[in-house]
Length: 204
Image (cartoon, rainbow, N blue to C red; front, side):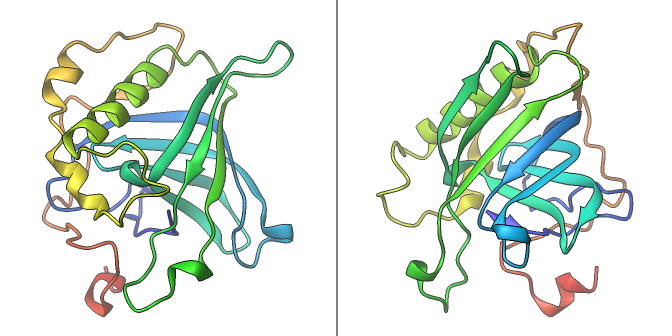
């Protein structure tokens, strides 16, 4: 997890080198805990989820205090589940490990619990793509249990082949997910090379 990743003025996440955005899903509510500075550490916001071959990024429609976006590296997600409660909307829940700066103690950072609630329309396109992608990422990186394993560079997920997956994706007509047939970022030359921002990257 990384709080408030770099965004373009239109709200699109600034991509990493070799990052390929797969889809964008509007009309979701996102919940996450253990956010510094928020009320009780818990944040709930409405917005849009972007899914790439490296990560999910939630971007809030309106900032909640200092919270405006949340980055979930796919290699750091575990315990994910698709939930279909009887009286509430379908959702995906799970855990995500924090992205810890190299000079900081891992013990100072806690695992986050997150939930993505599909408030508007179905999720028959998003959910299969998300689970297929995260399983492929794990297979490509020979990674089964990140919570107890060694620290892995989340950008290693860029090796994941998404083209074949996209060609065979099922599109649910009740799911307003937008699949990217070509990359949406107009400033394609602006690409991040690391999860830890440098002064030059902060100036973007």
